[in-house]
Length: 245
Image (cartoon, rainbow, N blue to C red; front, side):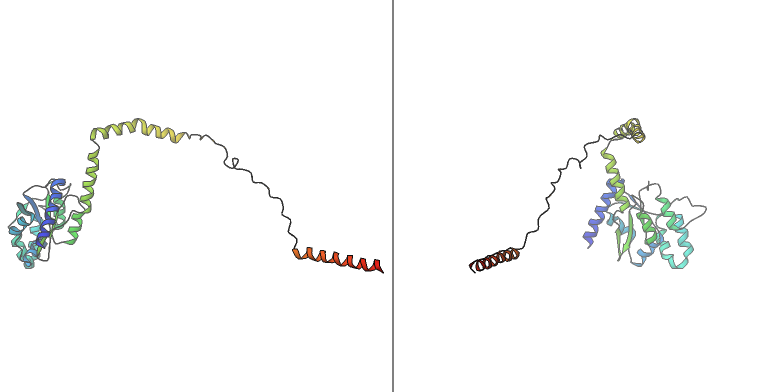
């Protein structure tokens, strides 16, 4: 199980390295829910995460995450102690802190320019992260850390880039220029004037005329002819008797 999990992580990491330019040290933003889950499952984040990602890792959090852990009190005191060991990155909410999920989403805005990983157990935050291209997601399942597979949004972004790379930029510019000169003008002229189609012969007139069938005479029944013949024979016999008398 551990070997297959490591293979999946290697495959997902290569996807982000080649398509979104992720490099070591990997910067992982953690929230309070991930720290609490690691404490509950006895996971040593600093020791285990670099081995799982097969590279150097920088663990970090934000001031908003720390403020939220402080406001929750004793229940998340252990998670707060874990988060205090990480680097605190500056966010834009120094004077007015916001929720940790909103803060982490703001840190990956504008196509995640700092190449952050997001480590969270918040399902709502995870779903929002999946809707953004180029943001790896880490969560804990059954006492193990798991790097989520690339989201459909990330895959679609990479496919669109590959298609755009097939046509060079100067050719795109030339095609657009030609469309402006010929395509659009020709399109407007065609819409204004309709071409008359050359009329061909009427297909119905080319069809062969059907021959009129002569009315069929109903056949006379065979029995009636026999009866007539019998009558004739009877009449001739009577005539012969009369002549002999």
